[in-house]
Amino acid sequence: MTAPRPTIARKALGRLSLPERNFIADALRTETVGGVLLLLAAVAALVWANIPALHASYESVGHFRFGPAVLGLDLSVEHWAADGLLAIFFFVAGIELKRELVAGDLKDPRAAVLPVIAALCGMAAPAAVYSLTNLIGGGSLGGWAVPTATDIAFALAVLAVIGTSLPSALRAFLLTLAVVDDLFAILIIAVFFTDRLNFAALGGALAGLLVFWLLLRKGVRGWYVYVPLGLVIWGLMYNSGVHATIAGVAMGLMLRCTAREGERRSPGEHIEHLVRPLSAGLAVPLFALFSAGVSLSGGALADVFGRPETLGVVLGLVVGKTIGIFGGTWLTARFTRASLSEDLAWADVFALATLAGIGFTVSLLIGELAFAGDPVLTDEAKAAVLIGSVVAAALATVLLKIRNARYRRLCEAEERDEDLDGIPDVYEQDDPAYHLRMADILERKAAEHRRIAERKAAERAGRLAEVPGGAGEENDSPA
Image 1 (cartoon, rainbow, N blue to C red):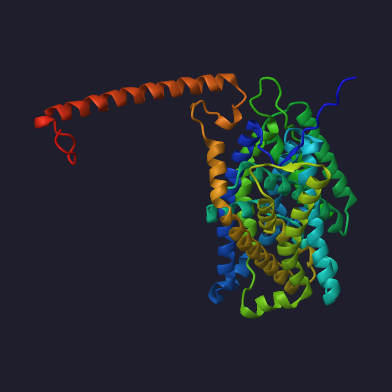
Image 2 (image 1 turned 45 degrees about the vertical axis):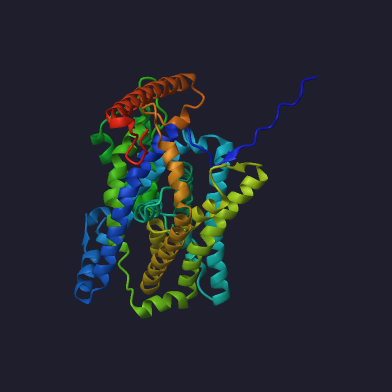
């Protein structure tokens, strides 16, 4: 009878594989730049909207309408930003989700359990906090979805501004959380904020998506085919009554994200590499410019904390997100018997959960949809999103700075490449060739140090011989 094989404890938030690490680093680099532009756009919007001499121009530009009315697309600038530009953002989100499902962390069900449950708890808890606040305060439950979203670009911009160095495992966890978060935010928008349906337009959009899928399956290439088709699908989806951004995520999910023989990367990764800068650097900042311009007078800020709807948004982002993500992560690790990576502590997970309380882009969008019939409450909800995100960012900054020296050492260890082969040393510990290279490098260094020691000894002996009477060094007594 053979002895039972010992069970190896699974590590939660352990080191990424090298390909996954490189992909995450490339994706987050673009998101960080986009996040800084997002911050600048949000600040510009607040300045533009709150300077009395400029406020009227902000309103007139945002409400300026253009587009083909005959196609039902005579929209305001604000509307084009929310429905048009954000479709690009959700297109990239769809590709990210597809890649995670077929080639990333979500491919392995055991590895996917942690970020998926953490993300779900990180959406359920803010919704519960909002609902409880409004049940107690007698407010509207219509905004329950506003504090459920995490803005990865804004969060990464905060990390860039405060200069903290999160280890790649924590960054990847944050990115995966945001991807799952985006998926469920899309479902929330599609299910809860579709109040009318034009079945003819919806059928046309679905037919367009089928054509899009068939062209991909046949291997047809060329932006001049897919861009016009994508615009037609988007226009039909908009006119169907379903939020137009759903078209973006649907097309993103259809792209192939696994590389075939002879391909350096899959079509989905290639297109994401091309479109992500457009999304992060243009689409999302422009949306922020025309959505974040709300009044921040003393009275308006006081109203945020005086109304149950807006107070629920702030508490949902700051308290609900932290409790939900941290609690979901801890419970998953506890019941799956996964031990936290020895490089990290639960304080790191708590700080990351606090950082995830930054809900900007999608939260602003859902706020516009949830309170569409009340312009005053819509603006106050936007102000609540801004305040909650700033509070979450400030708390996360304090918590992350406490551990930043530890993070810096972990990042340096992840980046160290002493054999200069382009692969960090931590990924080569099981490779005999790496240790032979290091032995050769160290032997050459040892030989060089021996030569230096011999030369210095000879130089010292020569100086001693030149001293009259055999005197020693400057402070030595005569021999």
